Image (cartoon, rainbow, N blue to C red; front, side):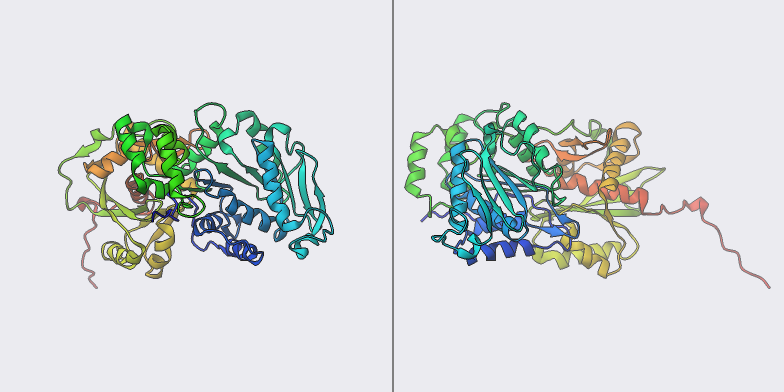
Length: 502
């Protein structure tokens, strides 16, 4: 029997050291107490979203995309219920269609009842919390005595205008338009909680146009890594349909593993025979979009970073050049680790290489720490971007050995990107040893401008099939050589000690 995979293709939730999932577990337990038990994949979406640190919510953008009828709203209802009741937050839930907003409203009334002091309420204790249930067509709302609130409506109906909310829900995101975004997203700018959230739900838009473009931008920023505060969960088949021929697309859409990967509810609320029928009825491209949740190729963020990368390659690096620093990065899934190394070359140059670029399993963390210890000891800096997936498994263990570990802040990381770009493109001050993985990564790295900081940028990747980790690793190693390491004095500069005669 073909069963849907419970593991998302993309889960970009940040996991900085020391983060808490207490709210996520509380939300799932709270819902379960009211006989609402979600599927494992829905629970993972809740765990991706409801992460906190000392400053509040780790992510300000939450997203969930899966093919239709899989049950995306199951995760959303758990979260809305918890945010309203436990945290007294104010939510604006918007849909493209009024009928969709009304369906969401009716699902919430299942918990709270249909009116104040409802004798037929399924959960009297929740009904007792209700201050008002408003059923005006297009302006449905549930308000609680403690301050929790949810308003539901169609975006075309002017939902939420003139009010302030903690959370904006954009359901049916594939229909979200620019003018709606301009009108709605400022409703959370002055969030009562001071920590606003926008939740995006939906499927890929049929055409790339103004309708759905904001949703595509959010998704692109999440899966390419441009938005470091995005918790985007996506169930889709792994592939890029824009790069497939029609023959390749037919083979791709006929592969039942892709059906399973994209549809976590397959074998449950979605029957296999239903998907088989759709496969026969739909064109391959329509089936890829509607049932496999295949998106357009993410657009390149900014311009390619390195035009002169190949010009800096050398064939004969000196093995005696002293190591300056190591840089470490991992892919978002933590299944591969890239370690960059910088050495002090002749003159003022810095030489860069990939010291390692290999599969990784978290069970091998201890071995990775030992690998770094053997080479760096307590002398050579190890540099990691603060938002790198490598930070969480490595930082504490490296520091426990009292190694020289430097975690780059957001500002330092942008300085590191700018420094490497300058050294390659404008005032050549690096060399590298042509390595296939590093070359492919660097030549497909783009500059992603940082909003409200003219001239500043960070690295992004030109497409999803580009591994950015090698570039990030050598960027950190290069910055470590410049900022945290000491270049050994030249032989002629060494002072000769004379005997002390009394």
